[in-house]
Image 1 (cartoon, rainbow, N blue to C red):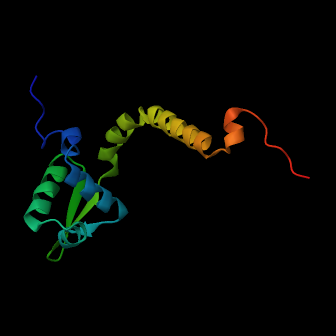
Image 2 (cartoon, rainbow, N blue to C red):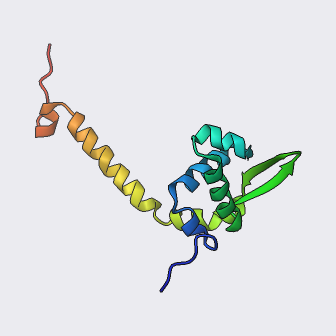
Image 3 (cartoon, rainbow, N blue to C red):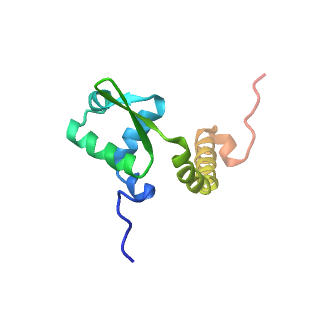
Length: 122
């Protein structure tokens, strides 16, 4: 089955790392294109192209203020992405718990790791 076009599917649109960077930056506040270009260090034509894709799939909205185009995230359109990735949260928590347990084991004093109690000094 052919993959959905990037411009018609939010999941495909966010598969591109630079678009995720732009979304993360826009999560903080509404921004003009110039701010996105300057902060992320991307070329203006590239940012415009990515914003067009994000706008076409409904992940961002745009409004004109004078000569500037201001972009912001559309939270309602992001909801399905959030809900879908949320079902995997238990895997992330499990992995983080395993990392924590391993770090705690490695950080424990040698006597604790062998299962014996350290001697108390008088």
